[in-house]
Image 1 (cartoon, one colour):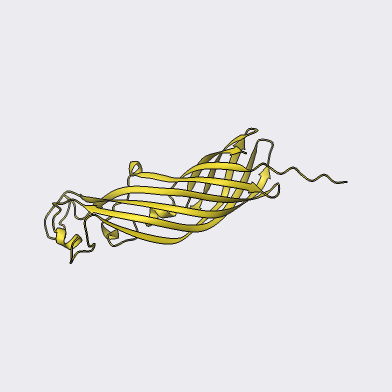
Image 2: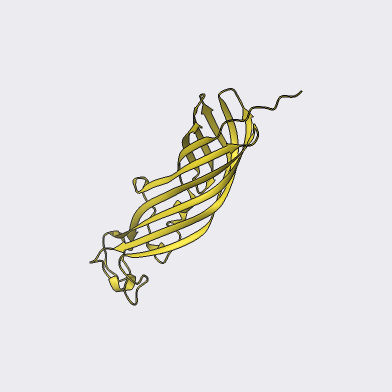
Amino acid sequence: MHKHPVLPRPQIHISYGILSTDQWKGIGEGPLRSFMDVPRTRDMTGAFFITYQQFFSRRSAVSLTAGIDNQNGALSYGSSRGPNVAGGNIPRASGAYCRQAYTAAVEYSYIYHRGRRHYTYGLIGGGYTIATNKYSFYKNVTDSAAFYGPHGMIPTNPYTEHCTHWAGQITPIAYRNETRRVGMYVEFGFGYKGMICTGVSVQL
């Protein structure tokens, strides 16, 4: 009589990722994208996710994950080095924007190699994102009528828009180290969790 292998216990993961697709989208979409600066590191809080993972073999697992991705940056046009749209020189910052993206997804993980206290794996995931972009120009910004108001690029100041899109994650390589109940891991990929994602997990 053959013994069935004991499956790993279900796990809860909490992770943090940077350079996610929504962080790139944040400066590449919307009515003011030509005036949105790349956020500095301190303006990008990153992508936080919580995940429930269930193994159905020693090598394979399915997960449900949900999280929020946030960034803040500056709106600008012109600079001290050149003219703005009206031909004058102004300070670079003329306002601010904030993007918050909420994602829910299903993931499949496959373990390439399992050791006693560690393993390497990859994963793919797919889901949906609901995002909110908020733009706000300073009240005394030069040429304000061109940016907000009846004839501007946005109708009001501040202005909030909502957008949705399909979300995906491809992580070809990841490494996890674990004790009996707690694990730590780092993942390298591309998608809603970021190009670099680190986290901790607890077995239930």
